Amino acid sequence: MKRMMRHLSLGMLLATALLAAQSAVARDLPDFTELVEQAAPGVVNISTTRMVEGRGSVHDFGGQEIPEIFRHFFGDRLPTPPGGGQGRSEERQSLGSGFIIDEDGYIMTNAHVVDGADEIVVRLNDRRELQAELVGADAKTDIAVLKVDADNLPTLALGNSDDLRVGQWVAAIGSPFGFDHSVTAGIVSAIDRTLPRDAYVPFIQTDVAINPGNSGGPLFNLDGEVIGVNSQILTRSGGYMGLSFAIPINVAMGVADQLQDDGQVSRGWLGVMIQPVSRDLAESFGMDTAEGALIADLDPEGPAARGGLQAGDVILSVNGHAVDQSSTLPRLIGQTSPGSEVELTLLRDGERRQQTVTLGEWPDAPGQTASQDEQPTRLGVAVMPLQEGEREQLGIENGVRIVEIDPAGAAASAGLRAGDILVSIDHRTVESPDQLATLVADLPEDRAVPVRLYRDGRSMFVAMRLSRD
Image 1 (cartoon, one colour):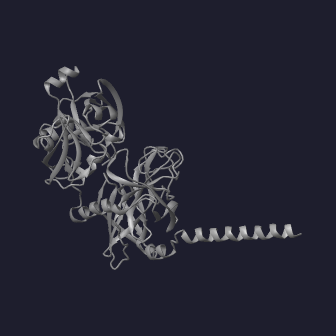
Image 2: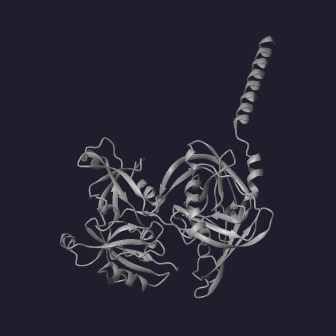
Image 3: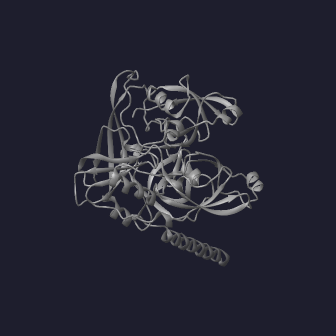
C-alpha cells in the first residue's frame, strides 16, 4: 500500500510539473489579440472587374497557370461559361487585399491584383464600398497604389523591414478566398530571398498561411507595424504549401512614394551582363570565397563602360553594400536613382579597386528617349547590335544581343536571359535594335510566336506570348 501511495504521489508530482511546463510554454507564445484589434480597421478588401476574351479556362490566377511553382495569388470568383466562351467577351472578377497608407485615401496593394482591371472597388472595415482609381503600379516590385475619395481613414503603423531577423513572429491579415480580415501567424523563415523573375525584391520568406485573396495584404511584426506586403507563395496545387513571400515594406514604400509623386518608378541602370561567381571561377580569380557579380559583357555605350568597367571585373560591393551573390547587384542598382554616382568595389586582375560610376536610367522608363543601342521593345529588354567580330566568331549573320532584361516582361517569362542573341522572331530575321522594335510592334497579342536565339554556343527556339497592354 505504501509503495502504491508513493507511486501515486510521484505520478501527481510529474503531472503537476508537466502542467506547469505547458502553462509556461503557453505564456511564452505571442498573443495577437491586441494587434488585430488595432490593425484590422486599416486593412481593406479589393475586388476588381475586367472584360476579357473567352479563353476556356475555369480559373484565372493573374495570367499565370497553376501549377507554376512561384506565383502571385488572388482568387477568381467567376468561372468561364460552359464551352469556354471562346470568341466572346466576359466579365472576370477577382479578389485581393490591401491596406491604408495615408488617411486621405491612399491604399497599397499588389500590382498583379489590379492588373488590367476596368473597375476597382475597395471595401473598408466599416463595410463602406468605394470606387478606387489606380494612381500607379510597378510590375517589377509588384506594388500598386490606389486612391479612394475619403478622408480621416485609419492608417497602419509602418515598421523597419531592415531590422527583421529570422525566427521573429509575424502575422498576416487579408481576405483569403473572400473571407475578410482573416488572421494567420507564423515566423520569418528567411530574409533577402531572390525569386525567379523578381530581381528587384529581397523577399521576406515566412511560414504564415497565405492563400488566394491575401495578395496585397499587410504582414505585421509583434508591435503591430507593417513590415511586408504579401505577394507570392510557393505552390504546386494553387494553395498554401508552407512557404509564402512578402515584399519588405522599406522597398514597397520607396516605390509607393514615387508612384504617388510621379505615377511611375525610375531605376538606376548599369548596362552590364553579369553571371554568378562559381567556386572554380573564384579560384581562378584568386578569391577566397565565391562572391560578387562577374561582368560577362557590357553595353559599350552604357554607364558601366563610360565609367571604366570592363568584362571580367567582379563587382563586390555597391556603396558599401556587399554583393554576396550576382542576384544582389540588379537590386542594389535598381534601388538607386538614375544620375546618382555609385562607389563600386571591384576585383580586377587579382587586385581590389574602387570605381565611381554615374548610373543611367533603365531604358524602358516612361518618357525616356533611348539611344539606338538601348532601343527598348515591348519584350521588356534592352539590346545592342552585334560587332562584326562577334558575328564571325559565332558564325551568324544577323541578330542583336540582350544586355538587360525586365524580370516581369514577356521576354523573361519566355525564358530569355541577358546575354542571349535574338536571331529571329515569328520567323522574321532580327537585323538591328530599331528593326527589332518594328518587328515586335507588329506581333499579335495573346498568341505564342516562335523566337530563335543563340545561347552558350548553340541555337534554340522558345515560345513567347505578348499580353495585351
